[in-house]
Length: 284
Ligand code: R5P
Image (cartoon, rainbow, N blue to C red; front, side):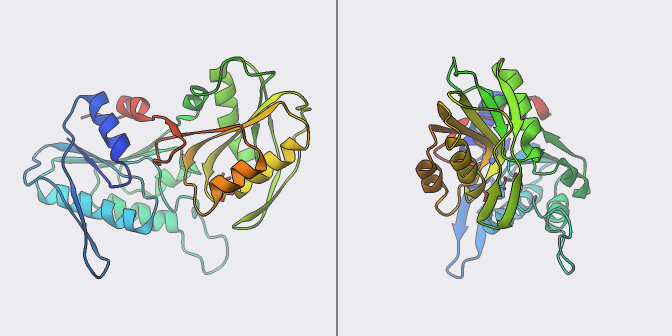
């Protein structure tokens, strides 16, 4: 049986199809004071998979409630899938006095999970924060699927060195093209400086790849820098399309040709489903 968080309805249904298993009818409620409540079917009495991207604080509370309700209703084994794990970027103490937020949320999720699966967290090492068996799936190669055939001398560019392995896997899956990365210097949560890649991209199709697009600051600056180099077209692709604030507008006005992302977070650009790789990773 699959129980979906309210943010992961589409992926939950796709995974249920892939696994040929029941999709539970979960009810979600918000009280006048803002507190939430989820209700699961009265009797579960079986192994369950909970699919829930913790894109907001309330999604995190909802996940804890889903796990607790499933256990109360007799779930014999709970596999919690975090297609997108919120707070994963706060994976260390950056400044004295900071919490390790990724560890705090991982510990709370571990209380009622028997195992956890995450997809491309910003740092794979966050899986060590769970106190139950946890694994991470790398679905980077899937992002080659929606790219147009016959890209013109494609160059797969990461906006920083950290995203280079995603660019490499997409290039390998696409089957042709070069790989390069830019250098990024983050000035604030919405401001970055990015340098040109060393590859000459004149008249070439560029595919910029990253793990997350949040405010779109990184990608819009990368597009702007690359557009100055005279490319044929600039595409962008990412695993987790958070798209907060005016991200779409920033990307469009920077001159992007098309945007491709996965359904770890369900947005208008989520054209790639991770249901199949997820179905291969879970045991019911
Ligand atoms: C950070 O290093 C990540 O890989 C992404 O580049 C970052 O989260 C994107 O955030 P934003 O869209 O706000 O620039």
